[in-house]
Image (cartoon, rainbow, N blue to C red; front, side):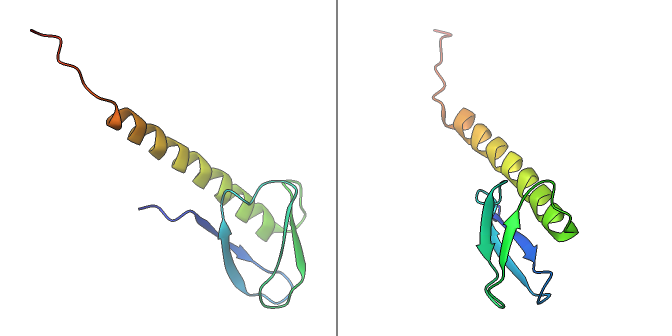
Length: 83
């Protein structure tokens, strides 16, 4: 099973925490659990750690969508029309 979280690095206190990839989209903000500074997630952020987290979240969302598509195709019933 693929983990649906992405590691986020806080620039202020230098701690790492995880957040769900579905949440990490432009316009999302979250408090660091250690120092409680508000972190804003934007694609054009100057913070390289935010850019890395956003890129990783985008890739993970794509991977999760592909896995779901494969599961849907595999779950479809197969009809034998040879007879």
